Length: 167
Image 1 (cartoon, rainbow, N blue to C red):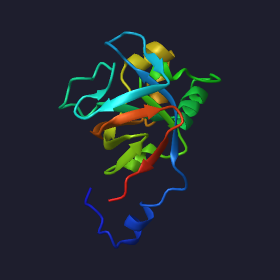
Image 2: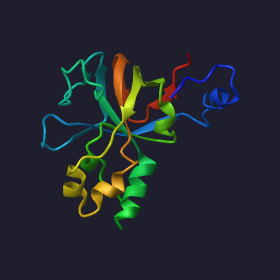
Image 3: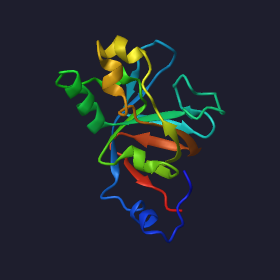
């Protein structure tokens, strides 16, 4: 997609957010197929991602940190006929509420002391069928969240704001 000129009306609209987001859950995956460890805080490192996460040490990865919206977890639960879904089941690192993560495309954003850059959408894998039950994969489609890379390291805590860093 072509970049919009900064003076275009659509570009201007895409710079406004009703409110900052908020971190409501943090988890790291120490190894493939191992249980997610829930945390109240974590440290994001440039080039490697979150301390204790299995993607740590892979500087070329565009998937250093994964984020999902709390609002989307509620939608997925509804599609599956469940009251709620444990965030650990979807194996993302950070759950946020109050901001549309897809609106962060081509942007950098601050969470706590850390600054991340959007690197893509986080599509569901076949494991969603395994952990969420029949229909889990389709329930997660278009609700999988985003991937990001750490560009400025720092601590991230529950309750931290998620805010776009101005150009």
